[in-house]
Image 1 (tube, rainbow, N blue to C red):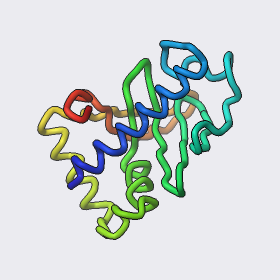
Image 2: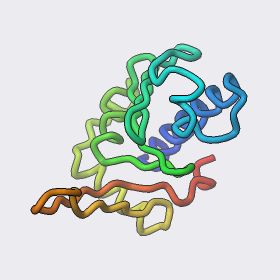
Image 3: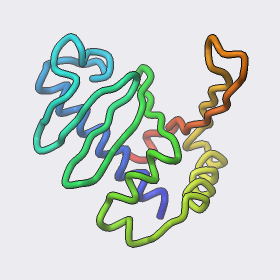
Image 4: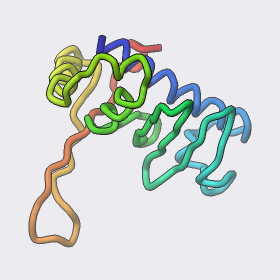
Amino acid sequence: MIEKILTDYITFIRSFEALLKDKYKQEINPCSFSSDFFERKGTINGIEYWFHGSGCTAKKDGVIYEYDITINEINFSQWKFSEFIRTHPEYQKLNYSEDYIEYELYKLINKGILEWLIFERIEGKAFGCVFKCYRVVQESFFL
């Protein structure tokens, strides 16, 4: 079921980005041109969105789609994906725990669909920090 949920998540993100590309006549990812061509916060086709840092949060009908993007790759944390599940009317009924979601995402790493994206330090700080995200590497699997 996590694969289906992830498919819905990625399909929405790519459809949302296609709307922005079409409206603003751009072929590059919206995260790359948002500050030059349109407001970093707005609404399109009933989707509220706001770009922040290297990512975007989009909200439609109460469902939250939050993600980061580098070049054209979708990255997300377990928390961001869990928020999607928690706010989705169909998927929230599954009552998945964060541990279960993380385990299922880990299985997708083993299948070569996702990869870890690990940040291991904070610039200018004497102490380190490890933060891991998921990076979609087999997007054709979903689309």
